[in-house]
Amino acid sequence: MKVIESENYNSIKKLRKYMKRYSIPIFLNILLAIISSAVSSAPLALIKRLFDKGIIESNEKDILYAAGSMILLAIIGAVLVYWNTVFSALISASIYKNIVDDIYIKIQKLDMEYFSSAKIGELMTKVVTDPNNINSVIKETFNMIPEIFKVVICFGLALSIDWKLTLGILIVAPVLITVVKKYSKKLKRSGKKRQEAMGVINSKLQESLSGIRVIKAFAMEQEEIRDFRIKNTKLKRIAIQTAKYNARSSAVSEALNYIMIAGLLLAGGYRVLRGHDFTPGDFVAIMGAISSMYAPIRRAITRFNEISVDIPSVGRVFEILEEEPKIIDNENKILFQYFSDNITFENVDFKYKDSEERILKNINLTVKKGETVAFVGNSGGGKSTLVNLIPRFFDVSSGVIKIDGVDIKDYDVKSLRKNIGIVPQETFLFSGTILQNIKYGKRDATFDEIKEAAKKANAHDFIENLEEGYNTEIGERGVKLSGGQKQRIAIARAILENPQILILDEATSALDNESEKLVQDALEKLMENKTTFVIAHRLTTIENSDKIVVLQQGEIKEIGTHTELLEKNGLYRSLYNKNFDFSKKK
Ligand SMILES: Nc1ncnc2c1ncn2[C@@H]1O[C@H](COP(=O)(O)OP(=O)(O)OP(=O)(O)O)[C@@H](O)[C@H]1O
Image 1 (tube, rainbow, N blue to C red):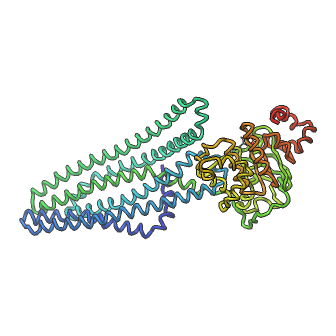
Image 2: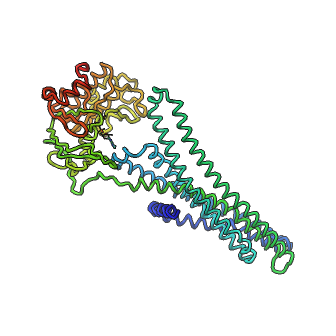
Image 3: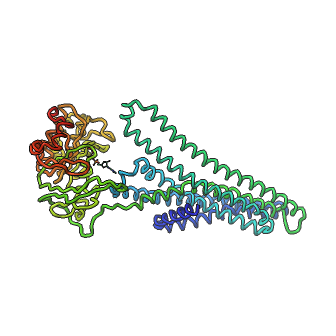
């Protein structure tokens, strides 16, 4: 339990970094809260005067005085409450915005490694729900401050009227504190569980939406619904459990309040009867003060409970904020501008994080400027892993990759990546227009340049035929376009970017003959005058490459041209005969 407590303390300490910037508004807001609670407690003092002087001594002036003061207090109170609420919202909204900005910046900076192991749905929870909860923590803390001051002021007032009676009644306080503490711990735990369950649900939703075609194709809707219901029910159970803890905590405090009032009525009533030092005004005022303490105490407890539920979010957000990318620029980084000679892999080994398996083993390879290298081999052989090392999506575990004799780790990462174009196997288009998608990598491209790239990519004609032409909006994943059209837009995007080095992961899914031809032709134009690494599936691509690299279980087994490797009668030949059945594809 101590560990959880100190975890929370550390999380809150970390939030201080975000609060610092707003220390003046925070200070002013606390001041406003103090004044506002003093004003809202002032009527209690007026009640005593109203009773003892106005009613008992039949003094009309005092009745008027009390009523007039009340109106004045109402006006001041309203102004103070307004500004206190506005300030609280302003501070918490600003802190929320800064945290969300920082998370987004962090996401853009983190290594690919982070995303290959993190679930997108859980990440969404960290980015959307958790900062929202932090926002509530801050807001609720601000809302709690005037409540606490109100309690302190009412308590002070009650003490000043009759300290013995006040302290006597407070006998119930330890019980109240124990109960609140007990449930706050339980609520913290269920808050953590709730966030985890929400993460699971977000993951499930995200997966279902991306995989909806597969679900429908396998007619698995009912199974998916059942699975979702189980997860959703778990969240419901946690929510009910949380509500029960809240309810128990409220019920106990409600009961204690009535016990306290009963004690007060009994003791206070007798004291008034005995006369002397305890007037009816004292009785009404102390009753007012003590019972006025109850509502803010309850509200403060509710707020405290809400904070307890939301506080684990602080830790989760900082988990991502404190994650540091490992692939960063060297101090003496070199700007990668012009590729002039060759790319070499020297004794390259690679392991994924948290894995003992060497995915790439002792890779040695030289690729000259302008060459096209095709990677072939069985699935899982390491082809994608190998090409991912060139733009430093992952760093080698040992060995070195050099471009023009310079270790790629010595280049400025941004300039390196800007010069490497990637056409992935699965085309990804952003929501927006076709134009925006083509110019994604070159925002300042002119319309003529864009048109030229689209023409080369065999995309111009179909784009022109669309009602809105280049300004046609495409869905989040380009749903309104055919697979081949999407591929050609992605190729146009790469042509426009005009990188010196190209990584191409050929799509395995076959398009119809016509579309296939257009894509193939577009790819050939894209590859013109470039140094290309291609994970090849089409025979034409393989045949036309300058070098074929056969990768198996992370090792280069053969290197050569198509004819050379066929003549060698080795692994390539057997792949050729067994897997590819190239003669038919041709
Ligand atoms: N992010 C990752 N974390 C851990 N292991 C991974 C990761 N990505 C891939 N692997 C493993 O690395 C090995 C090589 O995968 P890779 O995708 O490079 O092969 P490939 O030759 O491109 O396969 P395919 O032709 O099927 O795409 C596989 O065993 C795979 O399970």
